[in-house]
Amino acid sequence: MIKSRRRWLVWLVLAIALLAALAAAAWFTLTYPPLPEAVAALQSDAQVSLQAGPWWVFRPAEGEPITGLILYPGGLVDERAYALTARAVAAEGYLVAIVPMPLRLAVLGAERAAEVLKAFPEVERWAIGGHSLGGAMAAQFARRHPDAVQGLVLWAAYPSGSDDLSGSDLQVLSLYATSDGLTSLQEIEDSRRLLPPDTEFVAIEGGNHAQFGAYGPQRGDGVPTIHREAQQAQIVEATVGLLQRLEASARLAVAR
Image (cartoon, rainbow, N blue to C red; front, side):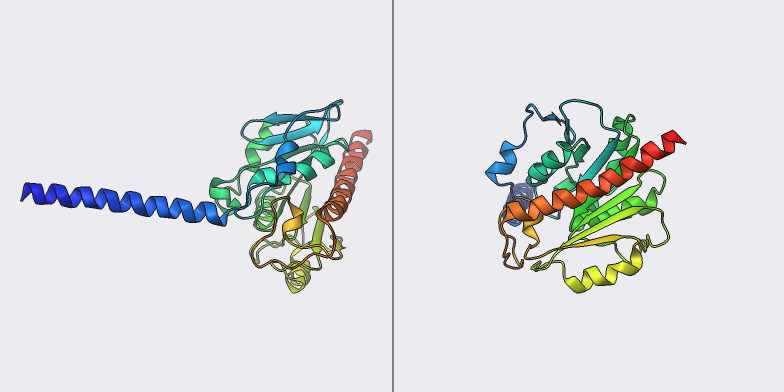
């Protein structure tokens, strides 16, 4: 009887281990790793300084930025896939922190921006943003912490119905791509009622969902008609524009 019970326990442990291995294999199959050029961007140079740790923090090599951007990655996307864009934004004079997420799902770490804010008290104005699911969770953080951030950047993303920001003072940028197969133009249009009236909506003609990062094709996505580099140049330009507006308001507040 005892031997039979032990044998049963051994088989149970083996079955659990097998299921765990299969689940891990399935998870890794579903996730999107960064392209080699994104990994290559994870280093300091004469223009941009990189700080690796709990977050990937890019900042200009010279000067102390007073405006920062916290980025949440898209669902199941390795956060390093956004290094190229983050580096380009930082080169314009801003601190950019890419925040890794538990199981690469921002819904499991929507409050992680709070620790970034504490770590850089010298930054006077903050925007939070993200791609797809990351953008939705960034909007949730902005709603829950209205005094902590002054800007919101949505890349192929929109707030959930429970995160109504239409009455907030946030400066908001909503970037979307016309060949996106995962975030529809109708969803972007419907999100207008949840965002402030002066939200800036910018369409990237011919762009798709995956090219908001650098991780290759994504299941269910549309076919882009522009190169990733061209799409990301537009992303950087629009995102820097919002950060410039935040910095101008910070300097105006100091002058007063």
